[in-house]
Length: 524
Image 1 (cartoon, rainbow, N blue to C red):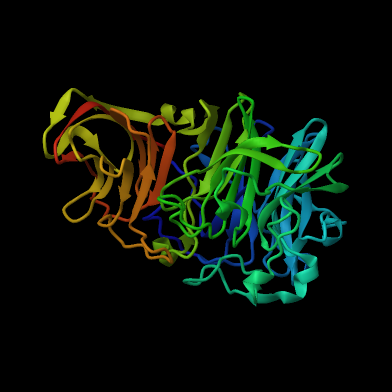
Image 2: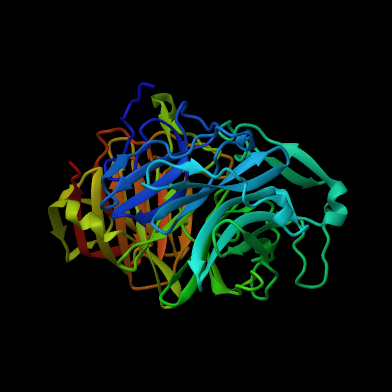
């Protein structure tokens, strides 16, 4: 396919052509960073899934590798080689992935001696319906995450819990291609109760039948697996919507940071709660403690991971220096993809370091970016009374910005980026709402979707005297790190190529620009 690169980013991972969605295995192996992803190489719309594969030395420059997995087996007939994860054992690289046939999803394995070429197990699938508890739906059992702990291999997967006694009351509805407008995305059979009152609630905590969940397995050898149980159960102090998810907790992930156990998951159709979960699908981080005998995760906190527009299917990897690094799909299902007409679609966030501190999961761009900084411009000590100012040297569309503002009576204060005669993207603090607003109403090409509003996102933050915004701009990408990465907001925008101005503005009073620093990001 002939590809037009006009919308491609400069320092983010870019699919060369075709369609790309969920990150799959991310792993440091044999001196290289490996990044696998869901890929359909023959069209810019979703199709039968393959595993694309990039490698890198530094998270910035990516080298395309041969496709790691192709759908060539009968057990992959429905959707191909779907999402999964990667682990190293005895110097070999193992991929576990989901394969689907009618009415059942199962987990399969492939192995590589060189980290590039993979051979599927002869005895695939290795996790089947026979290994599941009867309460687990075989139709919604996917996205395995493998990790090692206490001498065991564990597999965490998304699932739906059903009541076997009422299975005959569940109607089957099959949806179409996920790239079709306004369609659910997974091309699978979904459960729809003909009578919602038939949802069983059994024995206090043993509820949540008919709803999305996650399940845990363990193994000593990656081949023989034991089912342990489901992670999510009703716990006091948490909104009921978390326990009655209409979809599945997709793409689960598990890691530890500074002694805290963290689960990442991507809940489908989690209802809006205040200003959280404004997208059709979301990503959450859950802090707590795993019971590795029962599979239960005792939650202490749950939080939306990114409050922007385009962020899904987050996955992380451990680096040799102890960092946990995450990437996510920087898109959203059932939205417009302007690059489709250019024969490619699907982008990824810039890699982020995840760190647990002060009871919260912080995110920050990987430090490798610093090596690509050029042409520093900086200022500070400016008081802005009303309106907007441009600062000499601070502009561009492939840049890193760091701005600290002190609010001195202003009702609104923040940044205009990708600004021009007709377009601008706004990132600002609204004092009345006590929130950071990401407004792409006038950013350029309008991106429609199934949500009530696809132009504005709101991130509630703690009230402080100063606002710190660290912003990555990469042509058509905006990633905002608020107050040292306590909160993030991510989104794609499509201005005109000449819209490269950056302005600082305030309304309804004064604000002080304590500091403003810009770097060009130059990748040869």
